[in-house]
Image 1 (tube, chains in turn cyan, yellow):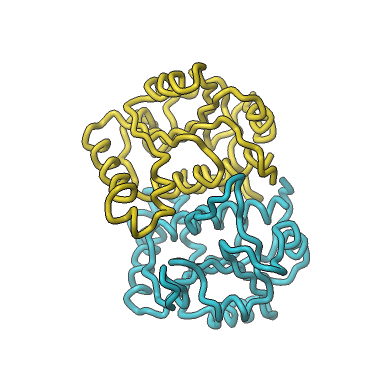
Image 2: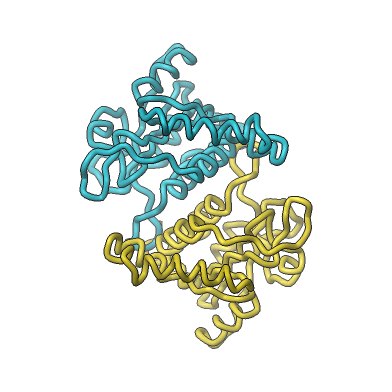
Length: 189
Length: 189
């Protein structure tokens, strides 16, 4: 493990636009454990911000309540390590807003990297993404909830990351597991 | 990725004896998403069985209800891929029972490998565990819920696996994330 490898990496978890089982575009509900697991993994691998993307006001409010419980509520003194992780979360209305926020912080637009469980020609390997992260430019790694990111997000992205594969033909990891494994693979190289 | 690497690997998720925040031994509650995420990761990496260990009758019943919903209830037709994963789960009352079950199935006692978030002298590296898995003997990889496995389980085990580390000093992954990353590391080698 390269202790000093500190890539300029942001992560987004998208709840809209994603697809459902039938392939229709939906806004999915925010899942409590997605926030905890992905924030803890992001903190472990030096991710600068974890954006939770939803345009729905009630979902933004729910997300903010969960974050506040752990960052300023009773959870913050009960479990300070959880606070450190959840402090990485920013709620955002769209991927476009996330990109503009990173642009403001970095003075440069991030390169976007979408994830998918499906094989696609021309996808970027984990090793290639690791190499890309060696420059200082910001990268935004994007995960979808539900049955995955809508096609419009995939075609607009700069890179499409190869899917995680194990030693079987089964490729139905949770987004929490996939995010953890992908961060481990791209940071370790 | 070695497609044909098929280790003789079992996984257990222990709810007793584990420790709480204060270091006391407790029986933790079964968490729905632990079952889903760990079963899906286990299926992805060719694990033979995922044992959910709890001595509490109500927790066993709850676990069985969740499994049945996805393996024979409405969930099984709604999402057959989820069924394939949850079919890997067996509920067991203790690690001793798990070891005996594997003994019956394999005609040989499994070597036990416990996990911990803490550094320990003499721990087994991921690469070393990968090499061990190249023989045909059964191995049982054991994860703790709560604040981790009780000391009595750790001292009785054959191996203690090194902790997962990222590129920061933060080492507070969820058991779901840790299990996913550890399976990826030991199966890929």
